Amino acid sequence: MLDGSSPQAGKIWKKAVLTFTYDGKKMTETFLICNTGNHAAILGLKWLDAHNPEIDWNTRTLSFPHTPPEHVAIAEEEEADQNP
Image (cartoon, rainbow, N blue to C red):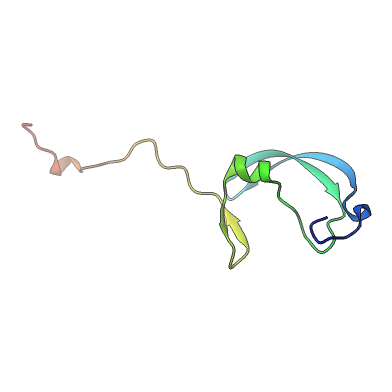
């Protein structure tokens, strides 16, 4: 394990496929169930690479960047030149 404990602590017991919503993003993920010692969860590099969350190491939180809108108003109608 990450903390140097015996392999017994890291033995995978079960696998669960869950669909959930986090920070407005719907996901379906496979979770490997095991004793993680003092850690609430361990995120794998494949998951971090696939979802690329923003990680705040000081507060120990993660969030997902919001998807930019498909259309953006560059100028209001009254600002547009009527005879370009």
